Image (cartoon, rainbow, N blue to C red; front, top):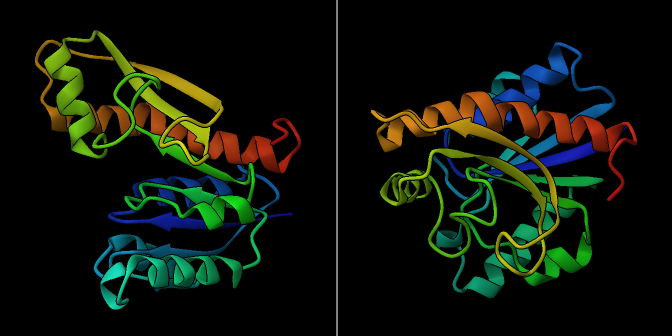
Length: 199
């Protein structure tokens, strides 16, 4: 059984996709041990609660400095003894100590086809705004291993999504989530749990 902890910052739609895939059996041999958010008001915590999954907020606002927060975040993750840490829309830089503690055992979903529209400043709606500004015809989502370089770790899966002429950042974001993110993140977790991907 692959024990995972999911880190989230907002609504938790990717978390929901993982929970739904476990519930319907498309993701096998996976247990979500806990959900951690840096945002007390993240709806993702409510989603976890509804499923009976332990959830907690560890916010930088509650600590005097970044180092104290990083320590607390690492301790919070360690308390669930995970085999895999899943960043599902977690808008906080992962501390180096956590990457050292879980080498090749932290994965992230990013809403573009890396190496396009990634790195510092590319998160949430901003990714889709930039894609539309650039005029790309195809975008998508990427699941990758987290390393110290932002969005630079090995790519595990990608799924393309066509851009429509009348897209707004919000319509594009919705299509990328529904057609790519919610598909490949559960698939990768399932592949890791069942030996199809070796990290």
